[in-house]
Length: 119
Image 1 (cartoon, rainbow, N blue to C red):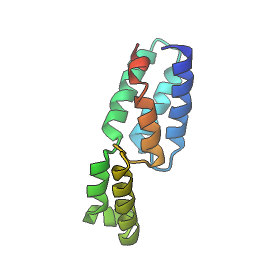
Image 2: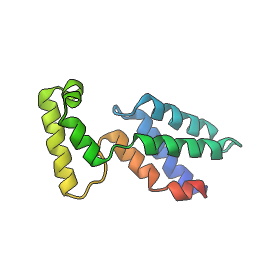
Image 3: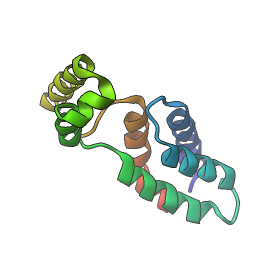
């Protein structure tokens, strides 16, 4: 991976780890990738990071469905769930493919560089 891609990815992984909406598994994969940067483990940890992030990013239709469900109400509360659902529908109409929470936004940015990370 070239230096510019590594620098960009490091910044986005740190952003991901700090995100309130980042799950424990993504935090662990991100930290493992940061720890392996420049070592003989980097390629393996890059593949593991990408695999984790591909599992974790929430497609916009999934967010809409979840926010409008009983599970969404349990997680967000009834009012906030309605707000999240409305927001998700709004950003979908504007062309969003994924949730735009801080974690998903960082994941989307990282995955845009996937091919360059694996090169």
